[in-house]
Image (cartoon, rainbow, N blue to C red; front, top):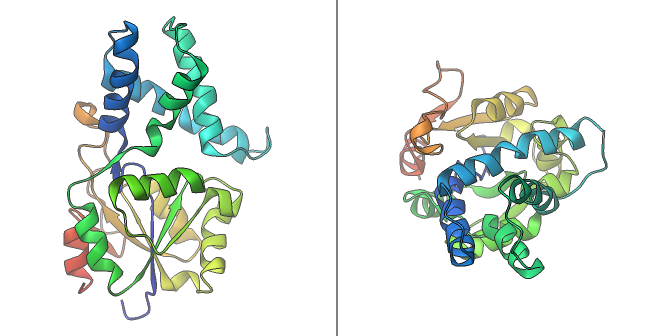
Length: 235
C-alpha cells in the first residue's frame, strides 16, 4: 500500500447507481408525455446498447466518439423501438443527459472523502469529461482529476485507457490502484501493471442479480463498499 499514490475509479455501477437513476429520469421525462413503461427495464435496455456501441470504436470500425454521442444514438434506437415519437429535440437532449444525473451509492461520497485524504482520486471512466464533471457536481463526488476515455481516446478495456491514465498522472502503473465493481475492468488494468481493488455492488442490476460475485482472491483488495476499502487502506 505504501507504493500506491492514486486510486483510479470506474464510475458507472461502481460509484453511481446508473439503473435506478436512469429509470427515475426516464419516468420524469416520458410519463408526462403519456408513456407508461417498465422504467428499470428501459434503463437496462439502454445500457445493453452501450458495450456494442463502444466496441465499434474500440475495434476501429468507426472514429472515436464521446459517450454522450453514443448514448444519444442508442436512445434514438430505443425510442424508435418503443414507438415514442412525441419528444421534441430539447426533450431528447434532456433525456440523454439522464446519465449526467446519476446518484452515488450511499457510501460513495463519505468513502471517497476519506480516501482522498491519503490518495489522489481519479476517474477512469468511459464517460466523457463533461458527463463526469456534471456527475461530480450532481452527487458531490470529490475527484482530484477526471481522466478516462476522452483523455485516452480509447474505451476500456483497451490498454490505452489505463496506460494513458498512469502517464498523465506521472506515475508508474504499479502506483495506481484501479477500483471497480467489474472484474473484467480490473483484470484489464492488472494486465497493464495496475494494482486492483474489487468493490461489490450487488444492487447494480437490481433484481437481475448480474453483479460480479466475490472474486477468488485475484485482486489486491476486496471490499464490501468504499467505507470498507477506506478502512482496509488506513484512510
